[in-house]
Image 1 (cartoon, rainbow, N blue to C red):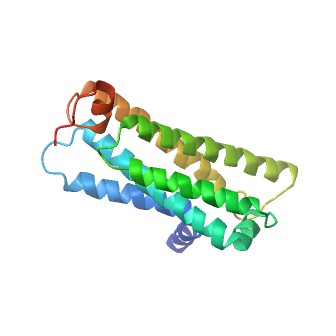
Image 2: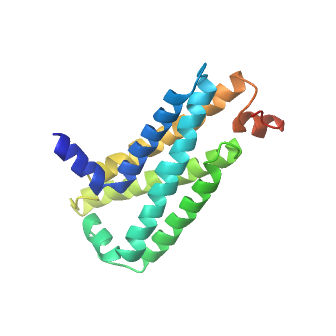
Length: 189
């Protein structure tokens, strides 16, 4: 069972980068000395999500579709297409934005935008995969299964993290990017 789980995580790099991001955030949270506020915990999880699930995940997606397009198309059950390069460049754009916005000092509105933009794509991709599964009986490994589930779950988690962090920051004025963006006050270090 563990071998199957590890194989699934390695085969689906978007899930892998999401899981790594969670682990990085949990380590950061665990190493925090003193009181761990809801604002700190939600912010650490959100920043790690932006960097790992979106930044690293979309950058790897760029590499897969730009340089291994034949393989990527085959695993989805599609033919190679010039649109692969367009998807690759879009993924690279999201990745670069996520690296910029994953910093603690970045404004919450930027994090909201990158998470929502990625979720729109992810939920749209999930809908496309379901359509292909139902209409064209496309049962390729990356049309259904873990990729379809991760398109929904990862993006839902991202949206929930944004909501949680914004709510925590509103209840606890002080030191985070969310408060600075909402109030215009400089962040305390």
